[in-house]
Length: 155
Image (tube, rainbow, N blue to C red; front, side):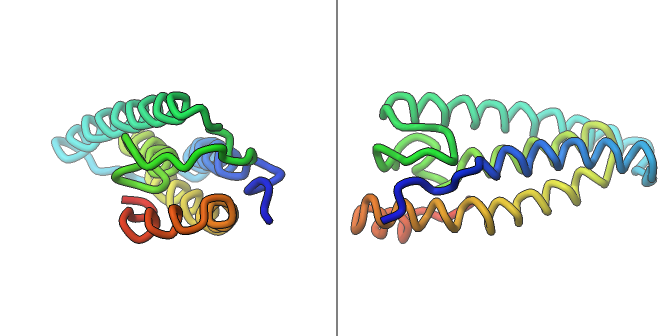
């Protein structure tokens, strides 16, 4: 039985690295950005995306706390949460973190963040989500399988 999903909390590390890498890449290898109205529109879209991501993260943290289970990706889940943001996505925190990094890229006019957000999502899927899903299946059995069939992994 898988007692906990991971020994290292990979997803927050990946997203933190994505933010740092986007900043460093833009500083040393700046990419051009869209000028004028389109660029201004993307800045506003980025700000809205960041705010939405923060809201989703906070709402998800509250839902996990309400059900008295962990938010940490390297700790065992004590309850299968299927309400709140989890009714829409099996991984609302990771979806929100991807939105956050992408939104930073739009807000600061850096295409590097768009790339690093995608890479962080792919790495999270491979090294975080896959292992978490095995843990949840072993821990919650048919309840997990039913939930998995009814709710998408990301959105």
